[in-house]
Image 1 (cartoon, rainbow, N blue to C red):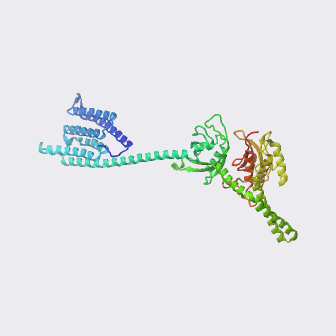
Image 2: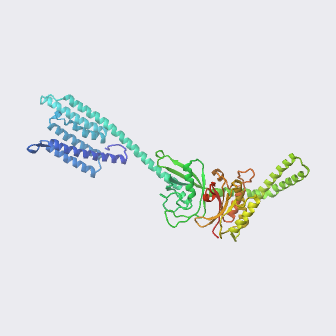
Image 3: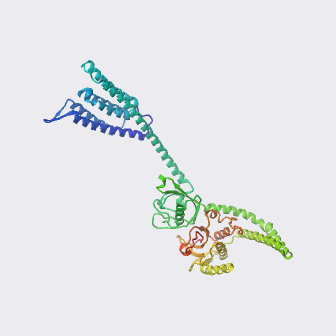
Length: 549
């Protein structure tokens, strides 16, 4: 017979530990009884009493029970039943030897009965209480009829009632504790299974997941996050920003901690290569990541844990652009005849009307027609240009003279002072990029910059740099307001524009020209703060060339 039905391994271990505590307590009680009842300490020395043998037997049995319970953890109920039976027998013998109820030893019955109530099933515990109660009542009746004494029968009855009440109360409390332990064990098992499931899901999910502390220390990263960041090695313990090329991620996380928002943040993590340290990784291309942050609600936020969700949107953006380009390719085949010819006819008719109509209202209406014809014609030209894929120029292009000439042309076109546009020192840097394509890309970027810059000295900056992998980059930035994450998500999509006068093809065309020359155009939320002075720029366009020339 089992002590409990359908209990877990943890609950069984708890019962065996409780039984060992019961055995240790029995040894202590046996020693106290030996000193109190088994020895008579007087002026003439120490003498044995009639109870000495019983106390010695009880101490030996207590030691034997402790040894058996330690080395043979089987037959729990049998061991407990034998121990309680020995306890009741020895206590009854001592009770009789000490003079019965007047000795006060009836209180010793509480020890085995409490142990039985805690560790044994209710039936066995009640049986033990009934045995002790019947013995007390039988001893009192024996004294009444056989020895003609008047023992306190009421006291014996009260002891019996107390035994039954104590056993019932303690047994119910013990059963409730065991059920709670069973529930806690089951919840622990469920939690462990859930953790294993979470590990499988996190390891297999396509999005990168980082668990980061408020101080920037990374606690864990799933395989997707390692792949996106180009990490190789143990990631736990390092701080965001310590790894090369991951400063944008650290800056975005710090900004979110200062002002938590629900929106996404876009950053660009560039390739890097390290020869020592915890993190040694490299990628061939920059990773354009969409970041989302979530706070972990642990102990009122005192632990300071946050989860960073990362999604590599480079492939998604490229796929979306390819789909739109395919649609535009089909549209381009009919644009020349279906759109340009009517535009030419409208433009020619507008010019003829302008010769005959000279009233203010007519001139204003003709100007509106002409402006919209020019806008649609410019859009048609941009679309047609997308279909003209030219082979990239294989000759190296010296950046220093090219940028100087470009600055002079741009300032003359827009009527800018010479000190508004700053050109960084390109030294002898050269790249493999078609000059006409690079000229068009930079004019597009500078045209956007001049609309938002403050037109103060050095408010527009163009300067070369090298990334951690040694590739040449060209940065274009201004001191105007930065691009919001919402706009950044659609920045290079065709026909997306925030200007009423734009076609939405400028940046898309610039990126396509860069891709046609094995380069990459992207927008980073980073800037040269020292060079910009007190004005705060929040981002820059970066042209990453294929390789140093």
